[in-house]
Length: 286
Image (tube, rainbow, N blue to C red; front, side, top):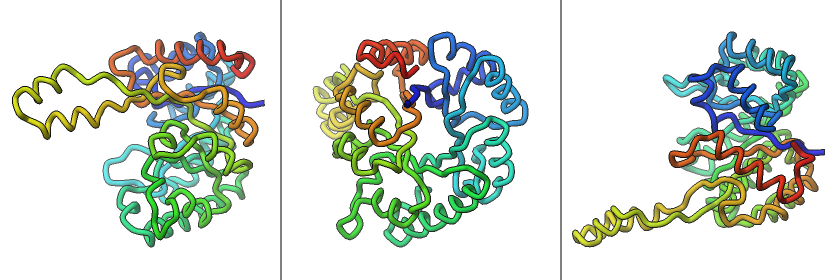
């Protein structure tokens, strides 16, 4: 049975403000007992507090995160430079899954670069599997750009068959495809799914001020920028069909994520998402 959890990036500021253990305790208090770590420093101290939460609170670490290579100044661990540390952290937290959040920006420039990235990921996936860890790739909307008539996501999946996919239903929808269809297409390769809704916000009053001032370009920036992330149930996605297909496709963890809560306390947003998923009849997945 799949388990509903949280993507840590949603509450990344809390890890700094409250501390790692207290953040995970607060998450447990509102009903989430699984988390995917991302955008939180995997320092020895933080990892120790995560293990403490696993031991004391029963927190499950659905997956950890890494990059293929580390850009200058980036705090995240990379498979190229921190392989042994990443494996050690996975073992400490009893997590058998590691995910890549996105291919490097410069790898998006051409088909050859996409293929080069995927080949490197395939090699890393093989090395990780030797340690009992499976590698997954998380999509955004850019993976639905076409190269020679094929979606970038399909190219990555075909070139790196050992690597699974972490499908993000918001970004699939934003990329112009049906999340249910994509989940069905990759059944058997999807153990991680991101849940966040897709909402069209209202035009801000500043947009009308720009229009009145004759700044049509500025108005159009606001006009095209109304797409928002939303709490589960506060947007337009069909959550019953998505949850049913995600579980049918083999998802082990369904991870609530919201890249921007637009001023709302992230824990309140997570509570709203939790309440809607319970209303839909999925309380047994928490």
